[in-house]
Image (spheres, rainbow, N blue to C red):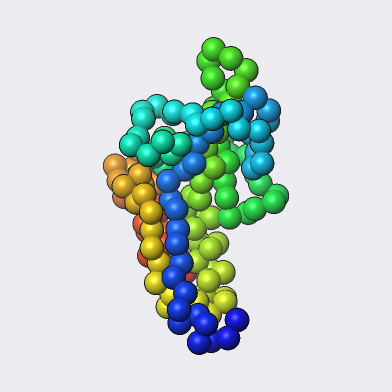
Length: 139
């Protein structure tokens, strides 16, 4: 891309974890049996709050290092509740990459920011870790 092309770019970021149910090992591209609901439902179908998945076991992704996949087994079946999301580390990687690509002054539009961890339930010591990663991730 040419420099003038970057002046017309807006970067869109979805921070709410995308949820689904699968009967195979949780990973990107696994078969999808529909959305899953974690501890409490949210208004957006197929989404959950970051504070509901931040402490779950994360499956390393080799196909997309900018995406984390966390899971929990259903208590009544062999299915998995899965959440694909970008945590603070993944957002930081995206921000570094955008600066490396000379897109550091590109406007960012963030969707579902209301599903960040505003109460520090993830025990990171940071209120709103996703917002912080976007705001100060490369400094």
